[in-house]
Image (cartoon, rainbow, N blue to C red; front, side, top):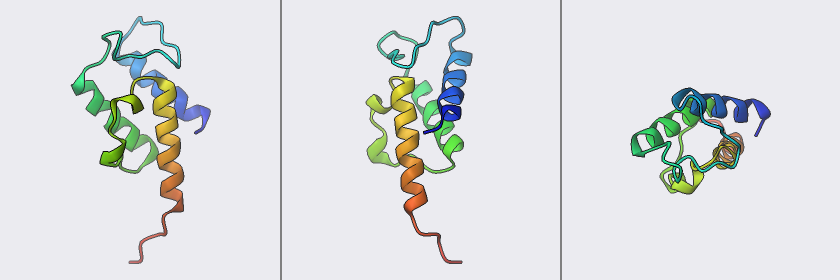
Length: 89
């Protein structure tokens, strides 16, 4: 995924948890920065960012623990979405 996606994800998390030192591999859940409500906010943010839904099979906590994991998820979903044929209207 693009650096822009990584940057936007980082900014979203940092706005929510001001003052944390956030590296791309920081596990925001194990450090207590995030909870289940924030998980849903992350899902919605990623869906808006890549303009596609996160399928239920991708709703694993491991996909949302770090900026690296979220960036990888966004990249996979965006790539899969581009491979889907356009719906006929």
